[in-house]
Length: 215
Image (cartoon, rainbow, N blue to C red; front, top):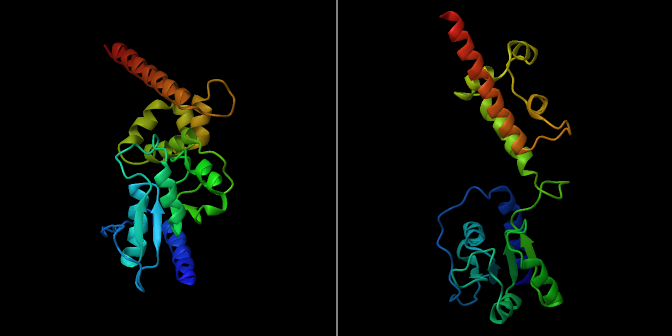
């Protein structure tokens, strides 16, 4: 039984980390299934989405239970005494991680040796201690701006000299050069937004001046 659960745990960890976006529509196993040769134990999960991931991997070979049995937002949930007992009785515990469930670390710490083996389904990128959402947004924005309808917008914002210097390619370095207003080598979302609007307004003014000159 322990070997089977250990093998299942390893499989879940490997598959969840690589196939988190490839969910099947398997029916979630209820907690009424009795333990037998085809059921490897009880897996406690923190949220419905984590339960879907586990169910997609393990199917009917496990019993899935949810920490919250009420419709409580994940950020507001706090485990009750009965929830803690159910967690202690589980064979393994999967939770989202990245501080989506603020109660997890303190709860597992308070249970000590009585806590089941516990694993996150989502983790930080290697070597990172915090997610830099603004840098991620800027990077994604660069990818969007060099393709499709955004390309003309990009070229219209940059002067002819800058256009020639950078070979029509919008990169994070170019965005930093254009919009880093306080020269701290870090581009915040506010700087990007303000700089974008400012350059767009300048482009409109130049266009109006050229139009007036023509008349």
